Length: 212
Image 1: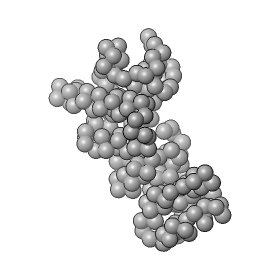
Image 2: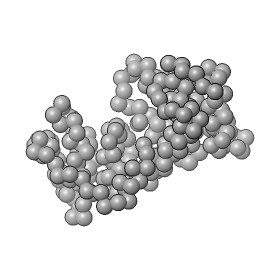
Image 3: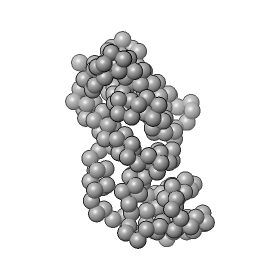
């Protein structure tokens, strides 16, 4: 997630008019476009090869308000969110903004430390660990875990990449708990703990690429 998210939330961003395929997709669901929970219901409609982008049109398909997509609507349909994440955004919009801002901090730290932000390597493990720790600091461990699990909910249960992410998320949450008890839970300490975990092979790395 990057700063485009915040520009999208605070600007007059206008969603494109729904395509005919998406309009038919929505009509077949029998969802009332004026229901107050239309956005949440729309986001859970199944998609196919020709309708996979239709969830992004939900703010335009739902017309519960006359002033266009709300901040919540813009956030819910940011590309790439899982269905479980959308449910959490609907229920906890303020906390969701914190989640995405902390994700940006973790990604920026990863770029700074590794000069890359890749998948399945040390930078991936570092990013997940730090993000989990920051979320625990800002939201508490239970809510942090709920958001982190929702982010990984779209993968297959036997997917090694998903297993890696879940394991490193858990390691970040546990580290945050230890640091909290010591009274020094902050980003610098989380980064140090993440690097120690990588060097000691306590964190899961599927495709090691090395780092300084």
